[in-house]
Length: 297
Image 1: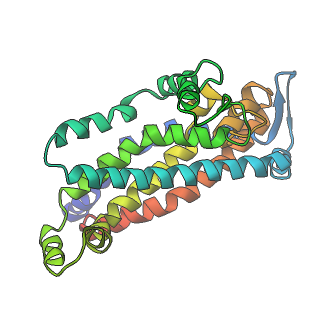
Image 2: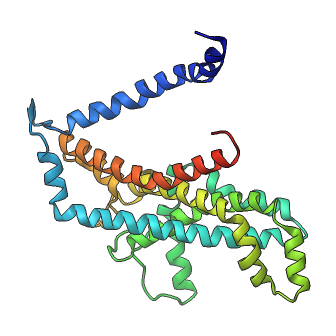
Image 3: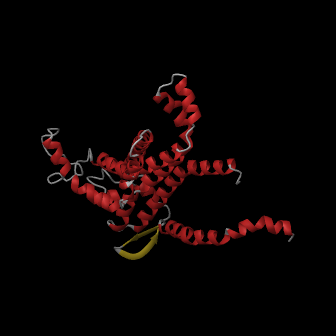
């Protein structure tokens, strides 16, 4: 082997240990899970019966699956859009501050650094129908005449959790947009202002186009995280009432540990993996495009 060939192969050889670890830590569980999904396996019997694609067919033809996918899409899309709009708005507002900017920036990150289970329990207590402070304030201010069943009403439970998740996850958008604003095109902004453009025009035609790569990558990341989010829903409603807040991760968990149907739970996990992989495609494309632009690839 020539010296030139060895030098060309050297970077790839350094990747071998990490690649092997990824294959063992991720590849094996995925392959094992796919194998389990082809069996009928419950705690009612120790016998595993090979059923092929029966678990997949049962899930895809179940009316509940359509409802769960719809709930997952509403949970993800509505949550990400709210996080994006509020996060960008807060970052632009704080960027214009002249006093206390550092203090406000640090304070805005507090919801994000609180553990998910702590957030869930805190909001569950505050949103209680009889003893929660939110209902107390709403009635004291005359906004409602009776307690609102935030977690028990199937019509509003999902949107309640979306708002709680927005409160927790918006600081990440705030952080990313704030970082992007540190390199905003000041010359273009000043030129636009001198030409008579108002601030909202500067934001729309100068700042937002500059932030588009940050918005795209942050949006895809938060969409994947929101799609996979489990602890907030499980610690508050456990997917109820009447499956109104049951998303793909929650229903997969319930299939395995409430209904004890490990075969169907494994099939649901595989289906969820496919959906999440599709959601990852734009992020991977954007990442490789950036690497090509920087000359790494």
